[in-house]
Length: 184
View 1: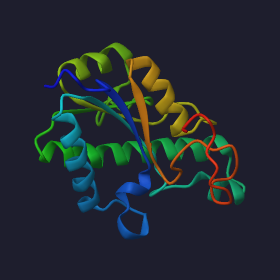
View 2: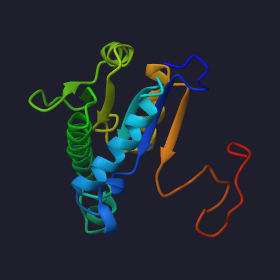
View 3: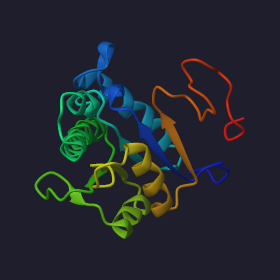
């Protein structure tokens, strides 16, 4: 372990599409293995790693809502999809030798621990990777919100957002490349 690390504990926010392979949909085991390898490199530096993963590779609630689906139902379906992604990532990480725990904001004891803040912190202290699934457990909140919330709860030094949006912008990033002072 190195003592000169800038960040001792990170929360990595991953897009679900990172597991989707070339077309960004479904779960590609090779992509899960690639992500696991990258996380392992960071973890081996002595960094505590927690992860929140999205579900855009499996479910986009907007599509259902546009067809008349109840927003809360669409959001709960997305939360379940994040747990599927968390399990896929856990499997790839454990096959590469990392000890992981999946914690879910929605109780599903057969596949994940319930999210308990102190337990998550203890897992990190023991050198385990913690993957948070099911967002905040509440509809109307994104996995970005869950990432910020979990980061604060576990005392993360930084949130690293690895999604299609590569920064915090003061305008639409697809139309303008001007970053706000938050990331400059």
